[in-house]
Image 1: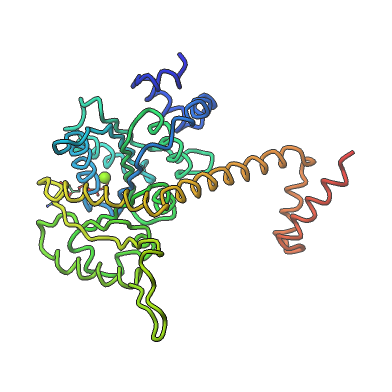
Image 2: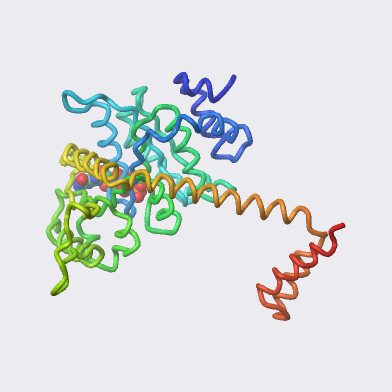
Length: 335
Ligand SMILES: Nc1nc2c(ncn2[C@@H]2O[C@H](COP(=O)(O)OP(=O)(O)OP(=O)(O)O)[C@@H](O)[C@H]2O)c(=O)[nH]1
Ligand SMILES: [Mg+2]
């Protein structure tokens, strides 16, 4: 079966098989991506991240339902959900929990849910997620929801993949400013206070607002400086704070509207195209670096790399000297 062709024809089995091949870094998976790549670039990638247990999966579930059954006049969108779980071996239960919470979506052919357990081998979690997303994009999934847990380097890298990133907080957690990692606030396009049925919502919102002002100070002209002409400036997006109750499906339509506004903002400001280009160039650079390294390592004399490392470990040479020596020796030993 030609996987790429079958995927383009809407074959879900081919899609599932390709996702597995891609996740396991199999050459067949890469071959499919090569054939599919021209069909990518249409999906809206939406990242959902935040501390464990804030209700991300419940929220993703509601978002997907609304995208499938939109308000009158809007077309239903095909939705893919990628649940990224970097600590999977230890939290197998959490994945199962996600599957159960998302059960009211199963049976809908317009939704495809994928839990990602492996870190992949080439380029790590972010690179593997990027590849999976490309497959979904080509397959015609217009909305791709990517759920990640926490604020580690992996999560931030994955968030950079998304066009729109939602950072989900819950009352109680947000009261402690220390609990909100500055890094994760920086990547937020929309802040969501979920579990708005619980007490402490106001405190959380106040804390978030305070942090937002630090992260995104509103620009005022200095004394004597001409007022910046708004027409000439790229409009600034200040992350809005939204409240939701995912378990009662409250606030979801408003959240979807904000997500749409953010998309519109990206398109009108030119940031959409800029983000796409940055992402693609980063991906190409990553692959190039890795390929050059592997190729070069394969053709240097046996033991040369280890010898350089040993000298380095004994502090006879610095890391730069080690590299210089390797590059030099390699040139000299070439015919
Ligand atoms: N009261 C209340 N509970 C909620 C709300 N949203 C989710 N929950 C509950 O919070 C718990 C965690 O929800 P999940 O959706 O699994 O949270 P998560 O952020 O995906 O969790 P991890 O993926 O494990 O980090 C579940 O018991 C949900 O039923 C809400 O708006 N209000
Ligand atoms: Mg979850």
